[in-house]
Each structure stands twice: as C-alpha cells, then as structure tokens.
Image (tube, rainbow, N blue to C red; front, side, top):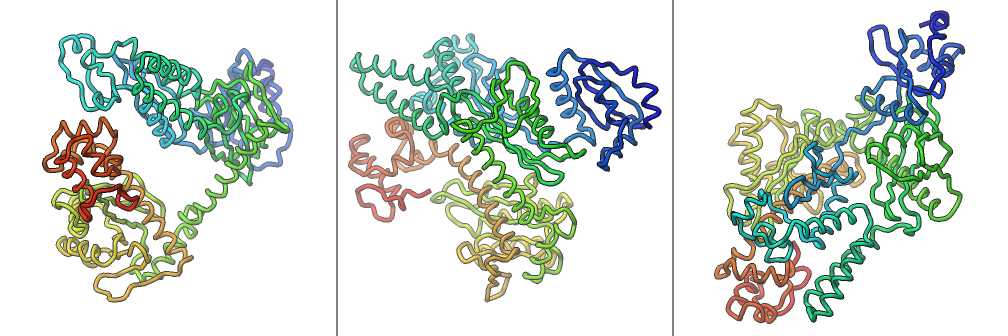
Length: 615
C-alpha cells in the first residue's frame, strides 16, 4: 500500500483507542499494534520515510488494514497481547517461550487430591500456578505433604462408596500421612480445612498456617498430649525453615512483580520475579526477538503484559528499571532508587545477566550457532580426535544405576547435531539380571535398544558411548555382535573417573585435552545420562522402598515393617539406628535381622556412618 493509496482511506480510520491489523495481499497477518488514536498511529507508517529496512518492508507488504475499537487503552493493550500470542505475526516482537508450565491442581471430587500437572482441564478443578520450575512445585508439594495430611490414592471416595465400606486404610494412614477418609475416619469439612491451608502455603501466606499449628500445639499440651504437641512443633519448624529459605526481602514489600531487561542487537532478554508476601515465588527469563527496531520501553511493556497474563499475576505494583506506559487499571509502576525494591530489581538484573551469559555458553557448548558450520564445528573436532569414519551427528550414551542390587535401571540419552534430543531419551527396567551385575545389565539394554531400532527401521547413531569403561564396553559389544552391527557404528567406553576413552580391543586408552571442546561435549553427554538415569532411579526407588526394602528382609513381615516406618518414618533413618535402638522397638531377634541386612560387612552394633548410609 502506497502513501497515496492510504490517503484515500485514512478518513475512514477512527480516532478512538483500539488495535490495528496489517494484512498482506495473500491475507497473511503481518502486524498487530495498539493505539490511543488509531488514525494518528496508523498514519505515522505512511506519512514519513522510514530508516529501518524492516519497517519499510512491512509498509510495502501492507495490502489492507483492519481495526477494532475498544473502550480504553487498557483494553487495547490486553487485546494486542492476546492477538500477538495467538497469531504470532511475522513483524511483531517474537517471544521465544513455547513451554507448557506446571500447575498444582486441586481436583474437583470428594476429598480432592492435590498433585502436579501440565494439563489444564475445564472440569471444575482448581489450578494454582502456573509455576516456572517443576523442582519448585515438587518442593512445595513436599512441604505440603509433610505438614497437611492429604490422600494420595486414586480411589473414588464418593459418599456412597465410603458408606458401603468398599475401601481399607493403607500404609499412609498408619504413617500419619493421611487421616483415612476412605473408611470415613475424616470428614469432608476437616479435609477442606486442610485444603485451605494448602492454598495459603501455595500463595506464600504462611502466617495463618503457622497460627493454626501453634493453636493446635497449645491445645495438645493443655490436654497432656505431649507426643501430638511434639509432632505439631516439628511441623512449625518445617514451615519456618521453608519460609526463611524462601524469603529474600522483608514481608512489608508485599505482592509485587519485578522486571528487568537487557538488549543486544535484535534480541532482548527480560527477567520476571513474582514476589508474594515478600517471598520470591517464581522467576522466569525469556528471549524476545525485535522485528522493527523496537526500543526497550516497547519490548519491556510487551513482556510485562505477556508474563503477567501467562502467570495470572494480580500484583498491584510493578517494579521496572525504566518508565513504561502500562495502562492496566489500579496498577502502580515503580522505578526504585533505593531500599528493598531496588534490591529486588538488582536481583532481577543479576538473573537476566546470568541467563544471557548462560545462553551464550550453551550456544557454544551445545552447538546452537547460527550457521551450519558453527553447529558442526565441535562435531568435526570430535570426529578428528576419535578418528571416526563418519561425523557424529547422532550420539547415544548408556549408563546403569542400582541401589544395593535393588531397583536396577539403565538410561539412554540421545544427542543430535550436538544438542540433547530429549524426546528420544529412553530408560530401561532391567528384566533378565538378578542382583548387582552391571556388565549383564549393559548387555541387556544395548541389545534391547538396537534390536528395537532395527525392527522399526530407525537410523542408527554414528557414535555410542558406554559409561563405565572396558568391562561394560565388552558387554555392550557382545550385543552389538549378536545383532550383526559391527562396523555400523562406533562404540566406545568412557572410564568414570579418569575420563579415558576406550575402543573395543584396544589395550591403551585415549585421553583428550582437559579443556578441549570434544571432551566438553562428551562430558555434557555423560552428565546428561547420569542426570536422566538417577532421576528415573529415584522415582522407581521411592515407589518401591516402603513395600520392598524392609519386607525383603527374611523374617521381617508387613506388620514389623509398618511398625518401623510408623516410628521412624523412613528406611533411611532406620539404616542409621544402632541395634540397641532396633531392639527397643521390635525385639532382639528381629532387630538382629534388620541390622545385619543393612550392615552385612561388619555385623557390628552401633551407629552407621555417612559412608555406610550412602545411596
């Protein structure tokens, strides 16, 4: 659309606030903008020459214009953000954030369950969040489960089912982690009171929860119920410890949103701190690509709107490093010069600086450069260092994990073009091996992995890394030979301590320079397989420890295991007990069985050292 063509329609554009949309001749949405006066803002694109190439290109491609009148600047601002998020026009700021954030859901059901989810379903359930970190959510759930007795089962606890006596209490009830609503031992009203405390914890409002616990502790003490009072006292300590760990600034700061920005060329980085009752509840940093040389004010304004909407923030104060026009009603914009708010802003700036530097480091290490040659530079170096016949565009790495011979698992991670391909990661439950046998376990999982790839006609990797050295490498090669894959890919072993690389049949190892990019990539692959394997192993162990670890001891039955767990609450604590401590709880004969099981080497009484109890 030329300036002359625009002049013919300019008088039809209203003067009211609203949003405008530019379309190409093919009907593609090119740009969405907001304006206090639509006619003045749109006219500015056509009445002057633009120095910026992208702006000129945008104007040249405009074929027709659509607009929507709204009631206020705030409405225009919110609608613009919504449309950009929905359609992502090619000339608008591009916020690179495609994650699905985790929520904590309180299910719409009798005796509602509370758990982590990424799927928001309109079924009447209450969703709290979203949160930026799964780790943060799990920490919150751990705090909740320690302090608030809630059910963790999936039973349908309808009033009819409970009245019929269909269910029996489980181990969680005997451990004091649940009040037994399945048998009607807890009323829905009492359960709802617990849920209210859950909501207070999730919103960072611990004062009413602590006050309730203090009242309960005093009541138990007055009734001479000192054991119950001690349990509540420990809960108070737990919440206070969590609060002190989480609080960064004084509670007088209240609920605020803090934003900081760094610009670098066509990109900007914005950090967001969500502060609830003086506690940093969440932090998130995003990358934004500028399309029309937008200044920091425009980029920050857009990011503030996007992030506040994404995290459903209701904070009435926004702390920023520079003045922005943010038209949301009843919201104050602050540019602090000192005090706690300035400290919060400085903390946000530290986060955004760290994010930018870490992003740069990852681009170098993970080969996410702009050109194909930059992406493959380290891979070419690795090919040369290991004298590989093919460029290792596809790398796989295996590692085993077990705990005293129990819960053996293996993990496989996949890197493509030097970047972790998490959708291709696989973990394995060991099926054919009993006890501790890392060699046999490695043989099994390597065979399962590549027989599956062959059956599905999937491409094989150019490089396979076996974490564990010569022995496990030899076991892996037995499977490679059995599958007739010798020569189809290079398989090497990586010694765990010395970072030596072994080739099948070679007597001597290869040691790459400590600071070489090749070894850095191999370390990255190895660390990732450790992380992935350990995470899966912990999940499996946590599901099986209660039932199996104690009951697996010959002579120890379900009742004794339950008694020990009810008293000491975890297997880890039971391992730390002396034999005398166990005798007091379960008698001499059974105490000897339990103690000897956890201390087979010494068989001596006495406390266990850190080394003995290491998982």
